[in-house]
Length: 178
Image (tube, rainbow, N blue to C red; front, top):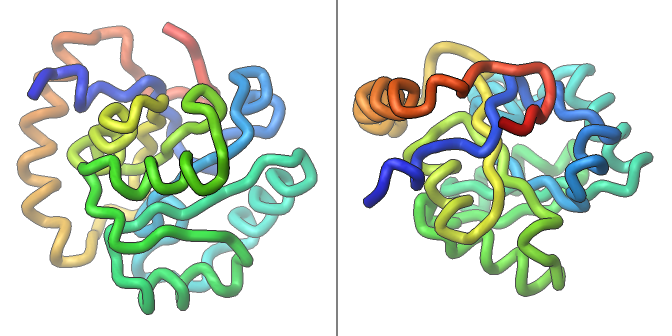
């Protein structure tokens, strides 16, 4: 494992900060997004008006959103049903399995896709393993589902190393090229 596996291409405060114009300027046609604490707070399955507006903006701009989650099909299907978005469940992040499946089945080029998530150890690592750019976002709420506790503990250590090695990484409001 190399440090670059965990180093995000971009760091944006929230997924909603990714604008259609910014995504298009970076050649993005499809946004892949983690579900819990990236797209939806795990304890707020209905989402927010801000999320629904962001999804509408993406649709209006011709950018597709696909959820890539390690959760069960039943859990993800229920969560995304009101949002009317496609998804891949059981993606096994940090393995690139789910991302590569989407690239293959949607006939997408690697440089047309970006993976957005709140964890370096799953989302960022999976993106880099699949050969696509990654966006690390701050988690929507501080608490997590109990299964995430171990990842967060390890990630705290990894973040210190990554940020020390890459001091230019900072939370942004846009996709800033370093």
